[in-house]
Amino acid sequence: MNNNNVATATMAGGAFTGAGTTPVPVKAVAAAVAGNALEFYDFIVYSFFAVYIGKTFFPLGSETASLLASVAVFGVGFFTRPLGGVLIGAFADKAGRRAAMILTVSLITVGTLGLAATPSYASIGIAAPIIVLVCRLLQGLALGGEVGPASSMLIEAAPNGKRGIYASWQFASQGIAVVVGGLMGVLVSWSLSPEDLAAWGWRVPFLLSLALIPIALYIRRSLPETLEKPSDKSGTEIVTSVVRQQARYLTLGILVMLGTTVSTQVGNYMTTYAIQTLKLSPTLAQAATVLGGTATFVFALISGYLADKYGRKHVMIWPRVLLLLAIVPLFTWLSDSKDASVLLLVTATITALTSMTGAASLIAIPEMMPIALRATAVSLIYAVGATLFGGTTQFIITWLIGVFGAVAPAWYVVGTSIISLVAMAMLPETRHYDVRR
Image (cartoon, rainbow, N blue to C red; front, side, top):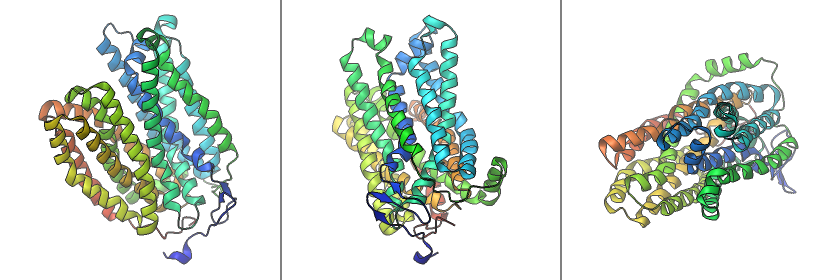
């Protein structure tokens, strides 16, 4: 396809338009990526306060057992993501992007409220962990269906020649969430006594995200619809069409997600790695998290700009090649030196290169799908990739460190990056695709 086939769009008066769509306010970009940002914010905050959450809802007799139960319940949210990808993605392709995005943020609200407001096990007994488990399942369902409709809307409504920079906000929002979540964790921990922190203080960061959800919901309700022609197919028919017609791209997309998800989780793991493996201070480890989030935000947007200028595949492939070549020497240097500045440099490098690949992927994958099946296909790719690889990476690299030593996570990134690079090479270049097709 060539430039003449690309949907035309104009930027005027603080709004952007896609071909045949109603102008979309620039502030709608924030609404489109709100669910993704909330996901990563909750992830960081939950990880930061997992010990207190375990004691509150899972008093199993030992601190280790309570912590394991807390982490396990957090992990179950990954397993409902594919279901959310199927149900909400198909709903977005049938009824429209806006309706699906309102649904996901409503479900996220219920899940976050349940975690923030549920009384402790000591107050209501076994009902407490059951409520928290149900809320995590709801959150997983919502987040599995969040990325597809939001990415589709950004791609379909972006100005001509700027789809990359607009869609890159999906990945950049993760960096914002990590920075805010890390800073909130540090602020609450420093401001409260250990007793207050354990009793109620850990709930404060979750209540903050609840305060932001109504704003995102209000903006989403005012969004124009970018799916011009709602489908007359049933949800089952839409999903069947995706699997039958887009099987090759579904497979390639999931394999691309493999590398991005694994290296993202390795970047997130650097806090734990610094404390447990390198024996560095928790404060320094948290600083690495905040720096990683900043790098994610900055380099995701750089990726979007470069993808618009040079094409999606170049920006997907070359940062991944650099990461593949650099990560083993970086981890070797870090494990030998155990130096604070080296930790920060390694974390920033991993997150920067990962965000460039990841942002370009979240541009190319929606673009290569037909509009009638786009939200379902993207939701499935993201949800399955996050479930298979996001839910297992930290467990795997913890085991690898125990068996093979401190550099083992780097070799895991190398292996998964090779697989993803093969998949990236097999994808089409989508910069000039007509996304209204």
